[in-house]
Length: 166
Image (cartoon, rainbow, N blue to C red; front, side):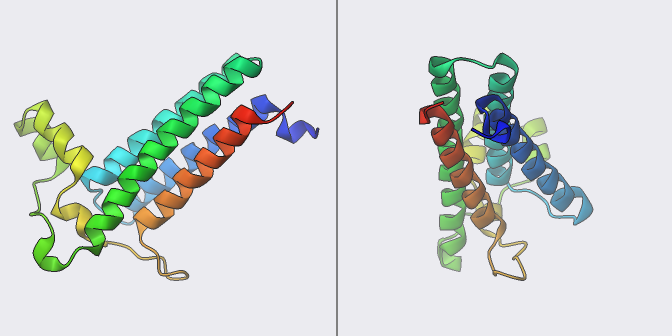
């Protein structure tokens, strides 16, 4: 097996992939001025969580059983994140008259509303999540599409990592 595909290094690659995706999200927010919606923030949290599990696996360097636990954990977090990306794509596909009303910004909600209401909005989205604020000029896909592809790829690599024979 090539050294570059050793289980420990694959976990590092997974972590670096999530860091890269989060850096792109930060650039889109702060460099391009795109305001993230509640579902966008939720997806970032799941990328971060999956990346931290992979970082823990890299630091731990477990045997087969541990590699399975870390890989399945990373895959489950990725699939949950993919579910939130699908939710956002569904909201974006709704006719205008069926889109939920827009809520206040997330920072305002954190300051003014109870945590339970903030979490409910982050998990279900609002009208802000239905807005397509950026479309890839090459493929014509919105951010949640790319996020979904990232989560699917991450889950696939994590499952390969969990069940491959080394």
